[in-house]
Length: 136
Image (cartoon, rainbow, N blue to C red; front, side):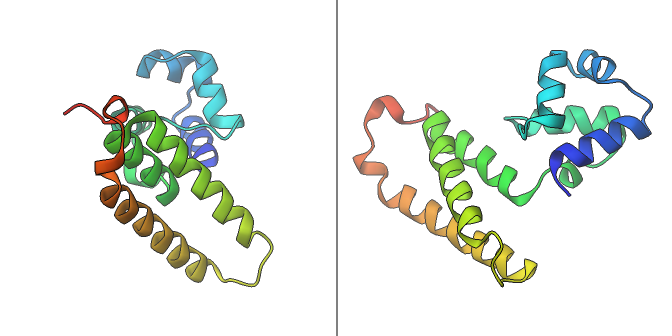
């Protein structure tokens, strides 16, 4: 089940409209609508927590492994790292779309590729221009 499906289901079970949810978590209606229909998702763990708290569900339930990977990439390497991580996720997902891999095998493959991404980012950190390094 995708984040969009989980969000919509949770929102309806809580008896909230998109507009009401948006007000409660401090975002625009357009943001909530984008999450539910355009394949978008929150960019921070804090936002997942806000949504989960309002809906009375677990933030971990809302977040998929891919979304966790993208958030972690953004936190560690900024928007540029998140864009690279998104590209990797899209390409790998497309590579195996319609293939014969089972769900468990696909999940394991995605985790292995994500792990390889982190190793490569760490090894290449010394070559990253300072303007792209996330300030701590």
